[in-house]
Length: 174
Image 1 (spheres, rainbow, N blue to C red):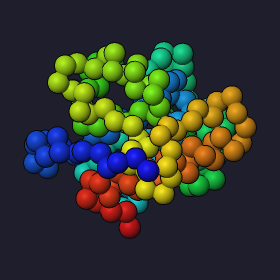
Image 2: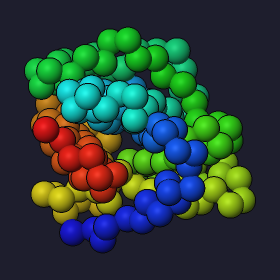
Image 3: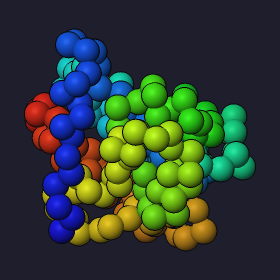
């Protein structure tokens, strides 16, 4: 199981400022919008929308402006998560200033994000799976070319990591 990640840098945020979390995958149509939607729903269900804000982006520009993959939307909807309002966008250098945590899905996304990361902001970039407590995965696998089970695996990992993140932030899910 991955070691707990440090969130000490969040203590330096202005008092009362919401924690801003950005989920990052390659195209921003499968994994990161799913993670965005799952965490956003858990935050809303816990009454924490004023304390935690969530967004998502992709390291590549292949799908900018597109909605999440229909399969990702269908699988998420079965678990009560609506992704339909999201639109893909590309990760920018500015995101490292605007967000407190940038949570990547895999090593390739981590390398691409690091290439954009301004000096002094590396501590904000972490793997989402580092917050998993029930699964021992190091990466959230890309389901795009796979079958139904790939989207279910993404949801299982993302739900686990979202719950772990909320616990790490000290705001356990109801």
